Image (cartoon, rainbow, N blue to C red; front, side):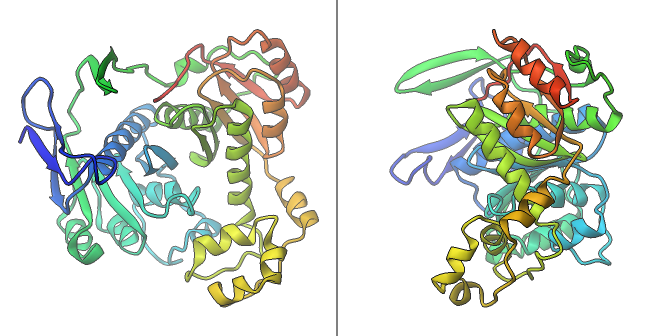
Length: 385
């Protein structure tokens, strides 16, 4: 098939809509279930590139959770800890494959933003992954293949309308890509910049102790940023994006937004945050917010969520977040001021990956040195629009 008609474009009034190969030939994908829309395919194709590159760079199965053409989360398939299983609502005794762990961790980064996501898997979707997806609010999934058991599970989701897309893992896009805006055609070379450990050689701080775990986290952050709407900043820990700030006009706003998400992810691991599955994601996001006590006062919480956990005090939040450490932050363009480093430090950042090239690089390096951070200049911007 070389063209697939869609119901409409970004909005219902934008018709006709379709996807096709500009130069002819068959599409490198097939729809196995459902009827994906325009935005679904935008998410699917961007997220597939991310997980494919992440698998190639790390050698580990990779997954992403996409919303509106940016990742809410991305991760490699490391085993889940007991705490992970608790905060991601996984059966303590469930047997999980590496690709299932990758998706659970990707979605767990920011469960509120992942609500209604598009899932991407670098490896064959197996029954363990499909079983987890079955109970999550999600629009669809893209993977290189599906086991018969996984496909049978996914075809029961959303009354049989869940979107399942299979893509050819050997597909290589054309060297040039085209895009029309307001009737005018733009052309550029496909972004084939390869992110791997070779781009992390230029360490510019006094501390040069870059562990293997930190190298993996830097790679995760940079590849995630490569497919995040710019400006963007990404916090990573243990192979998992824990906070993504996308599409902000100011770099410091990206850093703050991603940092607040990283803090929220860490706050969910506090002993007081014992919220069960019903209403879990919105509830947890509200519970860890600074406005929680005000929300309790107006009675809306009890009516909506049917329970009233004891609030974390501001002092408890600050004390808990202060124990976070070993976090990596990546930026798709240079940090123009040291204030980004100051904010990142508050979320436990110890490692930094950014292009460099600012006229104030010395100020940024000085700020990193003040806190004993390790910072690598990659020399390459990763804007994505």
